[in-house]
Image (cartoon, rainbow, N blue to C red; front, side, top):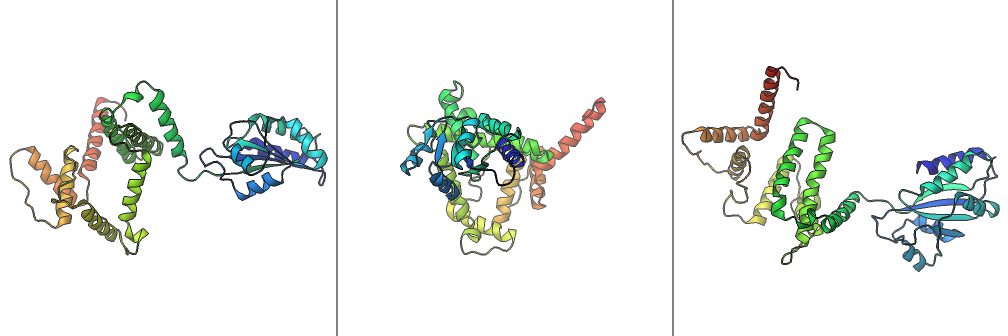
Length: 337
């Protein structure tokens, strides 16, 4: 794209005002957008052009353009050929490219325009379709499909095989957040996302109860809309506390739990488990005495409950203290953190 802009700027500078004739349009499209969904300026340009070319005979837009009555030549013209076509008769030519453009063509146009000896057509880069936010997720799905089909290791993985990686990636994400490392945060979010996509792709192959990534996304979309009536419905929520109350009421109706402890994963780290139990008890307004007993476990339970009451995440607090302890150990060893 930079080469296109350079060619246009150089061409404008090389020719006297008023002598430029013709128009050469590089029309880019995104493979992440359904073929045929082009912008209105793109359709207007295609319909008024004297010549439309595309180097890729398998370009996904070609059937739709031809169905619309637009004649497309499957050819890879040179910069010289296009300039000679456009300039003498002030004609418009459109070259259909990918979003990345045609590097050989744009380089050639830049050389001609930069020579200062050419009368150049008006050069234009016209986006025919744009990626919507989240469009790169389509690339991830496609890559995961290919890996699942062709990689000897990935093709035989099961949900159980991957379980440990989900835990590891989640902890690495938490570490990046607590360290304030933005680059690591971006990377670890990608690793967590991979786990979601991988599991969904495995689930797609289940012979009895298959589901896809679209099913996963559809489920969470429905849940988010249902649990945010103050955003998507007619409920009011002026404070974060109001939002949390809405969420808890809606969740209680959905789950129809017989106990406030239902749904709490008992395999999570002990301090997190204790804090989650304490949070459920406090939110439900229950008065439950802590069990008494001897040993460190009961002491840790009491400390975790107290931390939750004070709005402190006991797991995060302990990790922070452990880091300080690590730093002290390194310092004692004469090293550097």
